[in-house]
Image 1 (cartoon, rainbow, N blue to C red):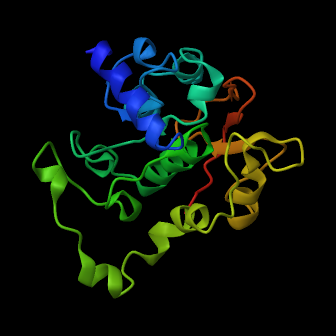
Image 2 (cartoon, rainbow, N blue to C red):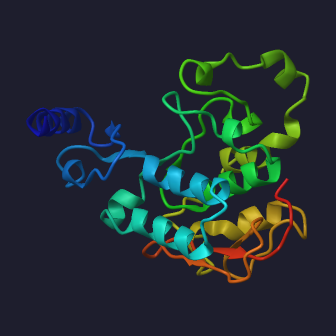
Length: 231
């Protein structure tokens, strides 16, 4: 109940005002995000918008623009900055089970990392592990294969973010470009990701019109009609 959440917020923040209170709400969660209950929620609408664009071939660039912008005009800016962004979880099918093309798979992860908020990678997503609905989505990690280096090439983007080479999206990089996405571009090999002040995500669906996704004062993602690979 809201009454319980308000009391929880008050008591927890008395102990430590920096504690992050996260709620699992699958729909618009504005009633819980007014500053006296949750700090953020699991951003399922964003993840679904990203996945739908690549999976549903009938969706256009304009559809993608609309759904992403809708995610970031639903809440206050300070909430957008700390949203818990994800593409799959313990309660959903794994992304890899729906996306068979690895280039499309990692294009979605790149978009996730460019968005405002805190990107969450469910264990195994960094190596494109498959898994259907619960409990199949909770498979054991293939540690022997990981330690043998089988998936080393699949963790480039994750490793970059973990090493803090990409600044927080809410801070910018000091160059006037929000999100510090130029660091990601410099990391990837020339020809894989092209930046002109914006993160360029290859449009694997071969649409011609670039789209600018513009969360308020945040990262701008453009879809360009190029068949380049991210990995």
